[in-house]
Structures are given as structure tokens and as C-alpha cells.
Image (cartoon, rainbow, N blue to C red; front, side, top):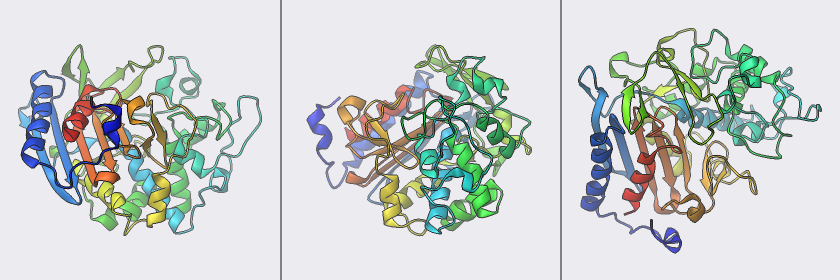
Length: 397
């Protein structure tokens, strides 16, 4: 890792493409050779120009189907970016107010604080994960979300979005809204707010508000083309094995938690509720287009001031597990302290990932956007896997 002082130095105005390609190729080839990753699509844009694009390895190793630039992936938490942007579009249209209580749209959503009182949860709290909500996969098997029958959005649950949010609301909050930070089901609650404010089912709302205006045809809550969908793998013991129909994936940074219930078949279940936090399917190319739209200022979706609000740390002074050195904006992490985060990225960089094996970051200071989709769960995820860290170090040289 470079010395902490190097984090503040900008990249050269033109990247040496030959050495960049060599370094990133080496990271991808090594991860595939070591079987930590089965397949990967990596896209890097600099000042609006794609300077690296590669699809490598297998979309389906057992079938011998190679991974291609247009391969589709289960997005897991990459879904949160699309939902957060959709909410911001509605805020720009004055159909949602950032600091209005969620009960404006969900009058019965009134989970109690730890002391039993009922506090206002705002849209800002949902976007910043400071609402006091949690995730079932952070709990032991007998935790309160499990007891309430709450779905985290990656299993096949016979429940509607409205019913799942109702169940979330029966579980006491972890803390008073706005007083701390916890990665959570807040984005799923936000999805129902989007539905109520737009008057559309969530899938149609995100299409109308985000993907259709940008011409993104591959990303949504259903599989655009099943023949292009990558198989799912889990990295175990240094090698990736094919996922079974239902996996219980343990989190290395929370050993006491039961882990994530991940069902590959959810992508094909028409009755599965639209999970704004984890339920979308899409391509790396679509995500790059959305992130570049934000990096360039937000048009035609958002104003520059809205993008600036999204990129501003909304959780100052709060510790983010499992993201040391990072704060949280309106929908994604914002790098506070590169040294604490052990990151070569400069302060202010946006980043998030997905449990099915994805990572992305936007470094506005250097005009840099990177998207890495793999089909190896946790290994390709930021945080949790080695691949995203190796990739970032390779990009910054």
C-alpha cells in the first residue's frame, strides 16, 4: 500500500493504459487461476472514456459458458444504488421530502425505539441507514427479524413487499433514529415509500425514474435474458464452488450471525417481492452508465446539488461496520480516511458492493469510475473479499 500521504495525490491526467491494463489483467487472471473468482467483468472509465473493459472466465463453469461483456448478474446490494437514485428523483420532483417522516407514505410503519417510545423515521434516515433498522443476516438464527418472518430480500419468501415492511415495523429498533448507523433493511422500506409516492409498483417505478431515461434495458427485478445470467458461486476455503438452490452464507466479520439466506432461484420467481435492497438483476455496463451519470452531475435524472448531497457524509462521527474509515451519504459509502480504510482511493470516493460478488467505486477527484462484477460470492464483494482491494491497488498503481 502507498504511504498515507500518497492518498491525496491526484492521478496523472492521462493514465498509462498499457501498464493499467497489465496490472488489472494480472489481478483478474490471478483470481481466476487461484479459483477465488470464476468469472469477472471489469469496466473502468476515466473522464467519461472507457479505458479498460474485460470479461474473463466463466459465466457457468460447469456448462462451459464463458463470461461475456453483456452477462447479467444477480445484483444483491448493488440494487441499493438504483433505489436510492429513484428516491432522489422523486425528491427532485417534490413527490418525496427528504426530512419528512416515513409515516407520510406508510402511516402504519411505527417501530418502537429501544426505550419503547415511537420516534419519527425520515426518508433521510432510510437513505443513510441511520433509521435504527437492521438485517436478519446480522442476527443469530433466533434473532428478532427471523422470529418476525422478515425476508432480507435474497431468499424466496412467500410475502409481498408491503407485508415484509409491515413485519419489519413490528421489530424494535436497534437505536433511536439518527443516533447511530447500521447497514439495514432501510432500503427495502424505502422501496415501499417509492411505490406509494410514485403510484407505481417498485419495478415500474425504478424503470420509469432511472433505467428508462438512461436507456438501460438490462437491469430490473426480472431477468432480461435468462441465457445471459451468470451462475452463482461461493468462495470457500480459497476456492469457489457452485451454489446450491439455497445457501446460508456466513459473514466472516460477524461470526455469531446466522448469515445470508441466498436463493439463486429467486431471480426466476415471478411472485418474489421487489427488494430494493437486494433483489435486482443487471449488467456491469448498465451500472457504469448510472454511476457515470452521477459523477458527471446527475443529468438527466438529478441536479448537481442532489448529487452533491448524495456524496456528502451524512453520518459524521458514526462508526460504520464493516467499513472503517468510511462514512455514508444518501445511498452509498463515502471515504473519510484512506489510511483508516487501508485504501488507495482519495477521500470523498464513493463505494459499495454486493454479496453475490460485486464492487464499484467513483473517484470524482480523478474522474474515475470502476465497476467489477464477479459471480463468486463474498470474494468479489466490497467489503469481505480480496478481489476488490487487489483491483483498487492495481488501478492506482
